[in-house]
Image 1 (cartoon, rainbow, N blue to C red):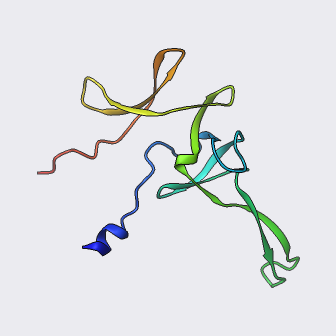
Image 2 (tube, one colour):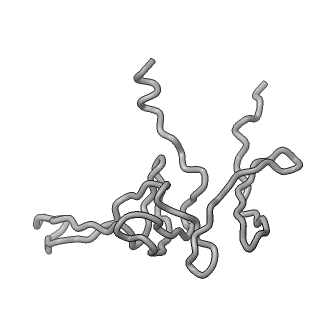
Length: 124
């Protein structure tokens, strides 16, 4: 029973590939980037959390050297960037049709970001 719960990974439903996000924690706090790929509850953001890898000379990489690459960041350290490089908190709600959607508050108004897939649909 314990093995099943430990291997379960949560899927990030609030962010998708191509979204603009701003880092709210870490060395890159305040920087804005675009999501390149998602993996579970971690995402890789262009230009954020850049590390360096020492690569030995080989046939595939004849030059070798030190290559920069982006490391993944946990989604709790990111906020969605909508305008003026300010982060907004995404929230979920159910509309009149029973569909779940993501929204954020901007100047006291609720702004719909996008709808989510319904995972609660019954299968016959």
